[in-house]
Length: 215
Image 1 (tube, helix red, strand yellow):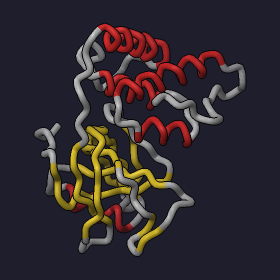
Image 2 (tube, helix red, strand yellow):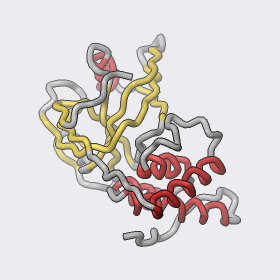
Image 3 (cartoon, one colour):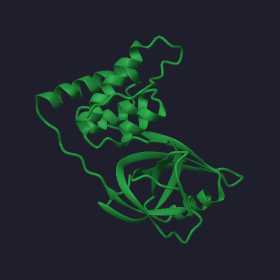
Image 4 (cartoon, one colour):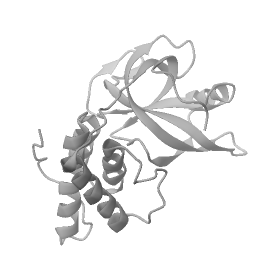
Protein backbone atom coordinates (compact mmCIF):
# COMPACT_ATOMS: atom_id res chain seq x y z
CA UNK A 1 0.00 0.00 0.00
CA UNK A 2 1.11 3.57 -0.66
CA UNK A 3 1.40 6.20 2.07
CA UNK A 4 -1.81 7.29 3.78
CA UNK A 5 -3.97 9.56 1.65
CA UNK A 6 -4.02 13.28 2.38
CA UNK A 7 -7.17 14.70 4.02
CA UNK A 8 -7.77 16.79 0.88
CA UNK A 9 -6.87 15.52 -2.61
CA UNK A 10 -7.08 17.44 -5.87
CA UNK A 11 -8.13 16.17 -9.31
CA UNK A 12 -8.52 12.51 -8.35
CA UNK A 13 -9.75 10.21 -11.16
CA UNK A 14 -13.35 9.15 -10.63
CA UNK A 15 -15.12 6.03 -11.90
CA UNK A 16 -18.92 6.39 -11.77
CA UNK A 17 -20.92 3.16 -11.64
CA UNK A 18 -24.70 2.88 -11.22
CA UNK A 19 -25.84 1.70 -7.77
CA UNK A 20 -22.32 0.48 -6.93
CA UNK A 21 -21.75 1.28 -3.26
CA UNK A 22 -18.26 0.11 -2.33
CA UNK A 23 -17.82 -0.05 1.44
CA UNK A 24 -14.43 0.87 2.96
CA UNK A 25 -12.35 -2.05 4.17
CA UNK A 26 -13.38 -4.30 1.30
CA UNK A 27 -11.69 -5.46 -1.91
CA UNK A 28 -13.35 -5.42 -5.32
CA UNK A 29 -12.38 -6.48 -8.87
CA UNK A 30 -12.96 -4.14 -11.78
CA UNK A 31 -12.97 -4.83 -15.52
CA UNK A 32 -11.75 -1.82 -17.51
CA UNK A 33 -12.74 -1.82 -21.19
CA UNK A 34 -13.91 1.68 -22.17
CA UNK A 35 -11.31 3.88 -23.88
CA UNK A 36 -11.57 6.68 -21.32
CA UNK A 37 -10.96 4.34 -18.40
CA UNK A 38 -8.09 2.61 -20.16
CA UNK A 39 -6.54 6.06 -20.38
CA UNK A 40 -7.27 6.58 -16.69
CA UNK A 41 -5.44 3.41 -15.67
CA UNK A 42 -2.45 4.29 -17.85
CA UNK A 43 -2.29 7.74 -16.26
CA UNK A 44 -2.53 6.26 -12.77
CA UNK A 45 0.52 4.09 -13.30
CA UNK A 46 2.68 7.20 -12.75
CA UNK A 47 0.83 8.36 -9.63
CA UNK A 48 -0.35 7.04 -6.26
CA UNK A 49 -2.75 4.61 -7.94
CA UNK A 50 -5.88 5.96 -6.30
CA UNK A 51 -9.31 6.66 -7.72
CA UNK A 52 -12.77 7.45 -6.39
CA UNK A 53 -15.64 5.05 -7.02
CA UNK A 54 -18.82 7.10 -7.38
CA UNK A 55 -22.21 5.36 -7.09
CA UNK A 56 -24.97 7.16 -8.97
CA UNK A 57 -28.64 6.49 -9.52
CA UNK A 58 -29.35 5.25 -13.06
CA UNK A 59 -32.52 7.35 -13.23
CA UNK A 60 -30.88 10.41 -11.68
CA UNK A 61 -30.03 13.74 -13.30
CA UNK A 62 -27.21 14.24 -15.76
CA UNK A 63 -24.69 17.00 -16.35
CA UNK A 64 -22.57 17.82 -19.39
CA UNK A 65 -19.83 15.36 -18.36
CA UNK A 66 -22.22 12.47 -17.65
CA UNK A 67 -24.35 11.22 -14.74
CA UNK A 68 -24.56 13.67 -11.85
CA UNK A 69 -22.11 12.51 -9.18
CA UNK A 70 -23.24 11.93 -5.60
CA UNK A 71 -21.88 13.90 -2.67
CA UNK A 72 -20.08 10.87 -1.23
CA UNK A 73 -17.86 8.30 -2.93
CA UNK A 74 -15.19 5.77 -1.96
CA UNK A 75 -11.48 6.46 -2.25
CA UNK A 76 -9.77 3.30 -3.48
CA UNK A 77 -6.25 2.12 -4.15
CA UNK A 78 -5.17 -0.27 -6.89
CA UNK A 79 -3.77 -3.49 -5.43
CA UNK A 80 -3.24 -5.47 -8.64
CA UNK A 81 -3.36 -4.81 -12.37
CA UNK A 82 -3.37 -7.09 -15.39
CA UNK A 83 -3.35 -5.69 -18.91
CA UNK A 84 -4.96 -8.01 -21.43
CA UNK A 85 -3.69 -8.41 -25.03
CA UNK A 86 -6.60 -6.37 -26.44
CA UNK A 87 -5.91 -3.40 -24.16
CA UNK A 88 -8.50 -4.14 -21.49
CA UNK A 89 -7.48 -4.16 -17.84
CA UNK A 90 -8.37 -6.33 -14.87
CA UNK A 91 -7.70 -4.50 -11.62
CA UNK A 92 -8.23 -5.17 -7.94
CA UNK A 93 -9.21 -2.27 -5.71
CA UNK A 94 -8.92 -1.79 -1.96
CA UNK A 95 -11.62 0.55 -0.63
CA UNK A 96 -9.92 2.97 1.76
CA UNK A 97 -12.44 5.54 2.99
CA UNK A 98 -15.51 7.59 2.22
CA UNK A 99 -14.86 10.99 0.70
CA UNK A 100 -16.88 14.06 -0.11
CA UNK A 101 -16.27 15.01 -3.71
CA UNK A 102 -16.79 17.86 -6.11
CA UNK A 103 -16.20 17.54 -9.85
CA UNK A 104 -13.43 19.65 -11.38
CA UNK A 105 -12.26 20.17 -14.99
CA UNK A 106 -10.36 17.11 -16.16
CA UNK A 107 -8.60 17.75 -19.44
CA UNK A 108 -8.69 14.00 -20.04
CA UNK A 109 -11.27 11.55 -21.38
CA UNK A 110 -12.27 10.54 -17.84
CA UNK A 111 -13.69 12.71 -15.06
CA UNK A 112 -11.90 14.03 -11.97
CA UNK A 113 -12.97 15.26 -8.54
CA UNK A 114 -11.51 17.10 -5.59
CA UNK A 115 -11.94 14.72 -2.66
CA UNK A 116 -12.00 15.30 1.11
CA UNK A 117 -11.69 12.37 3.51
CA UNK A 118 -14.66 11.87 5.83
CA UNK A 119 -13.54 11.14 9.38
CA UNK A 120 -15.62 9.19 11.89
CA UNK A 121 -15.68 9.46 15.68
CA UNK A 122 -13.84 6.85 17.73
CA UNK A 123 -16.82 5.28 19.47
CA UNK A 124 -16.07 3.75 22.87
CA UNK A 125 -17.95 2.54 25.94
CA UNK A 126 -19.97 -0.52 26.93
CA UNK A 127 -22.58 -0.09 24.20
CA UNK A 128 -19.90 0.20 21.52
CA UNK A 129 -18.10 -2.86 22.90
CA UNK A 130 -21.32 -4.88 22.72
CA UNK A 131 -21.90 -3.77 19.12
CA UNK A 132 -18.33 -4.68 18.18
CA UNK A 133 -18.72 -8.18 19.63
CA UNK A 134 -21.98 -8.72 17.74
CA UNK A 135 -20.46 -7.42 14.50
CA UNK A 136 -17.44 -9.71 14.78
CA UNK A 137 -19.71 -12.70 15.49
CA UNK A 138 -21.87 -11.84 12.47
CA UNK A 139 -18.78 -11.51 10.27
CA UNK A 140 -17.55 -14.93 11.33
CA UNK A 141 -21.01 -16.33 10.57
CA UNK A 142 -21.39 -14.68 7.17
CA UNK A 143 -17.85 -14.67 5.76
CA UNK A 144 -14.81 -16.92 5.51
CA UNK A 145 -12.85 -14.71 7.89
CA UNK A 146 -10.45 -13.65 5.13
CA UNK A 147 -10.81 -9.90 5.69
CA UNK A 148 -8.53 -7.01 4.92
CA UNK A 149 -8.94 -5.78 8.51
CA UNK A 150 -8.02 -7.02 11.99
CA UNK A 151 -11.50 -7.16 13.56
CA UNK A 152 -10.28 -6.75 17.14
CA UNK A 153 -8.51 -3.51 16.19
CA UNK A 154 -10.86 -2.11 13.55
CA UNK A 155 -13.13 0.84 14.22
CA UNK A 156 -16.82 0.18 14.78
CA UNK A 157 -17.79 1.80 11.48
CA UNK A 158 -15.28 -0.27 9.54
CA UNK A 159 -16.64 -3.53 11.00
CA UNK A 160 -20.15 -2.44 10.04
CA UNK A 161 -18.97 -1.62 6.51
CA UNK A 162 -17.41 -5.05 5.98
CA UNK A 163 -20.57 -6.78 7.21
CA UNK A 164 -22.77 -4.57 5.01
CA UNK A 165 -20.60 -5.43 2.01
CA UNK A 166 -21.24 -9.13 2.66
CA UNK A 167 -25.02 -8.80 3.02
CA UNK A 168 -27.41 -9.43 0.07
CA UNK A 169 -29.01 -5.98 0.28
CA UNK A 170 -31.26 -4.34 -2.27
CA UNK A 171 -30.08 -1.02 -3.76
CA UNK A 172 -32.27 1.08 -1.44
CA UNK A 173 -30.84 -0.43 1.73
CA UNK A 174 -27.30 -0.45 0.37
CA UNK A 175 -27.49 3.26 -0.46
CA UNK A 176 -29.05 4.04 2.93
CA UNK A 177 -26.24 2.28 4.78
CA UNK A 178 -23.51 3.66 2.54
CA UNK A 179 -24.57 7.26 3.09
CA UNK A 180 -25.09 6.90 6.87
CA UNK A 181 -22.23 8.79 8.54
CA UNK A 182 -22.97 7.76 12.14
CA UNK A 183 -21.00 4.53 12.79
CA UNK A 184 -23.34 3.46 15.60
CA UNK A 185 -26.40 3.81 13.36
CA UNK A 186 -24.58 1.99 10.55
CA UNK A 187 -23.66 -0.85 12.91
CA UNK A 188 -27.29 -1.14 14.01
CA UNK A 189 -28.40 -1.36 10.38
CA UNK A 190 -25.84 -4.02 9.58
CA UNK A 191 -26.80 -6.19 12.53
CA UNK A 192 -30.56 -5.83 11.98
CA UNK A 193 -30.27 -6.70 8.30
CA UNK A 194 -27.90 -9.57 9.04
CA UNK A 195 -30.45 -11.03 11.46
CA UNK A 196 -33.23 -10.49 8.92
CA UNK A 197 -31.25 -12.19 6.14
CA UNK A 198 -30.59 -15.19 8.39
CA UNK A 199 -34.31 -15.55 9.12
CA UNK A 200 -35.51 -15.27 5.53
CA UNK A 201 -36.87 -18.38 3.88
CA UNK A 202 -36.95 -17.17 0.25
CA UNK A 203 -34.62 -18.72 -2.28
CA UNK A 204 -32.10 -15.93 -2.65
CA UNK A 205 -32.15 -14.76 0.95
CA UNK A 206 -31.87 -11.14 -0.17
CA UNK A 207 -32.97 -8.33 2.10
CA UNK A 208 -35.48 -6.11 0.30
CA UNK A 209 -38.48 -3.94 0.98
CA UNK A 210 -38.82 -0.62 2.84
CA UNK A 211 -35.72 0.30 4.83
CA UNK A 212 -36.23 0.77 8.56
CA UNK A 213 -35.36 4.08 10.24
CA UNK A 214 -32.30 3.70 12.47
CA UNK A 215 -31.85 7.40 13.19
